[in-house]
Image (tube, rainbow, N blue to C red; front, side):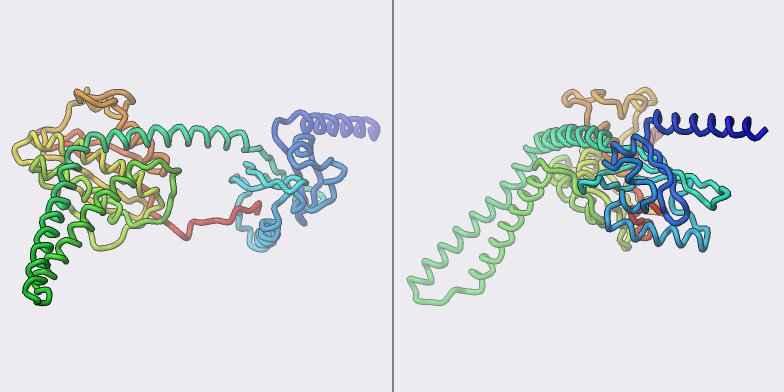
Length: 387
């Protein structure tokens, strides 16, 4: 009976060893002190240590130094309180090769109670190839996003030129008036008058106005990598509205702003969010200028989880057939345009963890497009640890 049991044990161990060696992912088993008990061949390739070198060592051997202390702290906390940070959940962590290279890993952890005490089985997947693909996709998307911004600025170019011409013309006239008064004062031997100083102040204001318009346009069209930060959604939308009002003035469309007084913070790339708002506004203005009332309403609000920006026009709404292809790439009802605007806008929103939705309106109601974004929650931040 003893020999038969030994054979079964040997077979089980052989199967377990074979499973470890043929697994596509790294597998590590540690005890409740963090000492490594199993270290399969994929782990040898991932971290540069042989199983013989790793087994018996603390798991911090394959962690970046800044994370090993946190891991020990969370392990101790789990044993004391039972609070799980990763066991049975999984998350992305950082691993460290023996040559010091730090790289991203996807880690899933399971717990087993054995005769030798609690043990933890970690399954590790190298994320470097996935990150390389994601980075390339991000670069390609950034190029497409940049193209759509250029397209938007091209369509708004005539209105922008008109708006820039106004402050620059005013600036020229003011400076000509100042020059005449300076010559007159010089001939009479009198100091500059208050009127002259007032004209100079107006000249400066017009110059600043022109500079502000140019700066906004430059921010929209310049090519750069996405940069996310915590921003007040009201300020981001206000800047986009200021830019769009140049077009609205030429179309005699009123833009109504429905904002609260409380800041609404989101984690976002402000320029990309403004690109969405600009695209929605351009579409709404185009529809509204053909309607009888000619207005566009922009509303901003939030609940406990999400912030939203809604753009509603005074038009007739759109049909169900149009709605089915609204966010489809290269689908457009415009005579000119590539049909990328709404598709790219939704992609940007979803990359931010949000979405872009449309209410078709109709029956006397205009269409409404709503951008949803997750609210900024600083308390949700977690350390990048293995604990």
